[in-house]
Image (cartoon, rainbow, N blue to C red):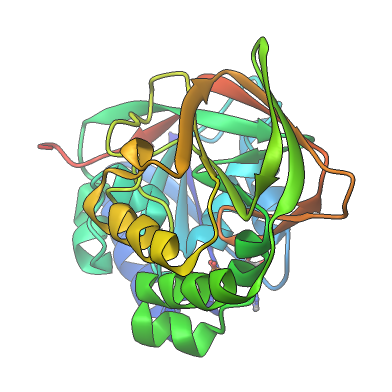
Length: 296
Ligand SMILES: Nc1ncnc2c1ncn2[C@@H]1O[C@H](COP(=O)(O)OP(=O)(O)OP(=O)(O)O)[C@@H](O)[C@H]1O
């Protein structure tokens, strides 16, 4: 009999997550799965549960929660030979991974998608010893993103990040970076370096419109300028999708990236606080298989 594990963060999605479990269970049982439900109680529980699902040859893991829960679930798939297929019911504020894969942001509709026969192989990024699914942000702006309050996130969604970003850019200086990408190197000062795998970053689906989830590339943006006029125009480019063409932005793609700084600079990984520099990024092409809607 096919086996499915539901990994659910009961604290996600304004504490509404548990309401959806029975619908997901029913959908999976109807499809012939034996279902087990694992509730997370703390950080990294989702990773531990997902490792068990790999070791016990589960066919499917469904993550019910925000991008944080999804990030932790995906990390359970890191060095595993058997990797169950992934289903996603997004309950967070931003839900970049679901946006990038056209998985409905409405939980009820996302649950219906679990019956889809269409799957997509998706790239994962490796950052030092962990995986990321969407984006790594480095620099003063990234540090401010980690501090966006959940109240602001719920109220303003993606605009909370933009608001914090503009506030931050008006008052801060850049960090010195050394960015090695494949055989090239960039040395300079920047308030923000972004490495994106998908088109959706911080809820902005147009940040990297050309980034396909399975193109085997890390899409990198270095923001160079800090003046207020530039900040406003960079923000507009974020919204309208031409960031890579902006004159104060350097854009490149790479398979391997190393970012270092003589200063202690923090990172933000998939929307959560990440490690200090230096970081090494690489790509695991088409590493996981995700259930996506029947029609694009
Ligand atoms: N039972 C729990 N109570 C509190 N926190 C938990 C629990 N289980 C897991 N967590 C932690 O909560 C973090 C945030 O979860 P997640 O991103 O899924 O939800 P969210 O905060 O509603 O989403 P978003 O950040 O997009 O608004 C996870 O990274 C995880 O470490």
